[in-house]
Length: 541
Image (cartoon, rainbow, N blue to C red; front, side, top):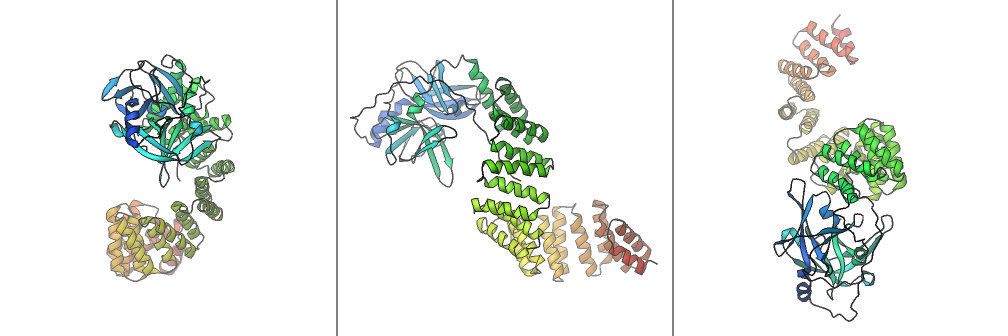
């Protein structure tokens, strides 16, 4: 079952004190070289250090006026203890943090007045799709680089209240917080993020939104320190320090008891350390604050599933799907849970829906194939495994499962071909050797079967089934003593292995050890093998 870790931003709102900008109507179009010369001295490197004073993150920043205001992204600072401003390889001291909008990912710093040239401010309300733009930033520690592109979209998200300028100019790691200018060299946005969805999608925060951030003194503001606890929790979680993350989230919740994202994130961390009941309590609180929080229902369903409360978990996915009916992963997870309660037809319906939403959802095809196999619809199962292999030709488990389906249809040679392919991809998968051995036995290739069982046992010396199956193959070759040794090993690993007692009884009987054989058959009967009583009635009286 997949678990998605979502780190949600908190929504902190400020009153706006607008800065005045005066766009120059008569500015001329500049070349890329002219743009770079005009802009580069106003772009700086931002370095962020963690609580161990180790460099944690890097971004860029832009000087926006002669008062020494530098704009960057808030996420560059988030979770860190301090930042440095670097310009031409020299550290530039800053006086204060004077502007923060966490939700819009904006941070404004104050340095000495008129220390560096500032950029002309454009008007992001007047930008148009297709307009040429340039992005200037400091990727991976290099000062400064320029990339050219166009405005490819203007994105507005009503639920979050966020607006972005989508651009084709590349934004490399470390360039976040850099300048996005038009072909006149006017600042129209601050680069903020890159999303990878088949292609790189680059976004900038419109400059008009940046200019709306309240200007104050946040370095001395206790509220700033309070909401930093949230991001320190995120930072500790990313480093794998789960208990430290919980402490930060808990401290934040003490100050902001109605913040659903903090409860959600603390629930994620608790799930990671297998405190599923504690995680459920946190998701409960997040849902109490925000009854439409689909992610909280989703993750609460995962936690309930881990506690084997499958029916309650299904109810949570019902709610998550009601809120977001296009969440393919919610359908997938609900399908997994339905498999645990034996509702294979319902499981298949959920995988169908997940595949309708995402026709390339390999895991959904894979699990649908398993469900169809449980319903003995092996031909349809094979079609699903075919699809998985089409999407991912190196999926060893898909070949393995397709081999099992073919074996159930008595296509033993086809099954062997699939097991061969699975072994080529993953030569350490013991179950594949075991099943290939079974199929070779069906084709009466007992020596080949023994070789496969031996390989399975070499990989996993506690593999009771492989010992039992090798014993059967040895029995077919009348090596009853060798067979008994294998059954002994299987029983040593699993003292309640009914089939091994049954088979050992047959091997002992073939060696003339009737009384010992009868004892094994009685044990097999006690463990649930009814056929053992038939042998007892026939040979032990």
